Length: 192
Image (cartoon, rainbow, N blue to C red; front, side, top):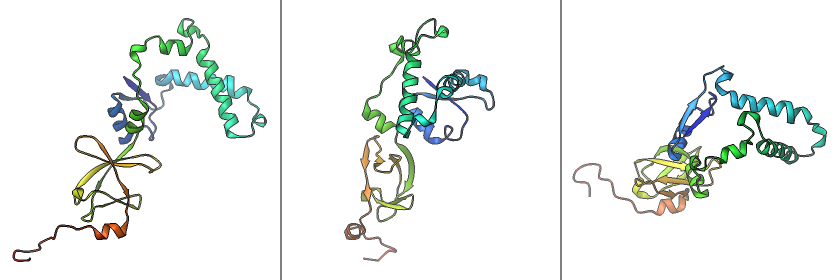
């Protein structure tokens, strides 16, 4: 399956490549400055502008949630209305007409696959730094380069183990970290 994107910087990056690989899809990008290359979405924007936005009176909305609700209702109505370009089918009916083409992901798969990913080198005392915040990892990772996955809000951060499993890490507790016994490093022969 293929995701077709605009050429924007937010779509063309390593995180998007990793995400696509994890869920088994390919990324495709439209040529810059060629609206015909993305005619379907351009047509949708025009329909939204001509039908929904043209009928809006912003004074009718008292919150962003009300505005979102209005857009949601418009999208629902649009997706359930027959379209001549779809031979009288609604977009929703057309989408579900080939169920074998739809691959559903579980909530857990979505949560894990949409985590962001970075690499970090672990210090000798088992600490890594992400956005100037220190985190503690298991001592077995000391002095190694590791892959991490994390939620955009940084509430969940995991080490990607060699077998692909995710092991959570936690904020550094400097007091506890100072008490961990570590291997004694010999600087030269004869040091005991």
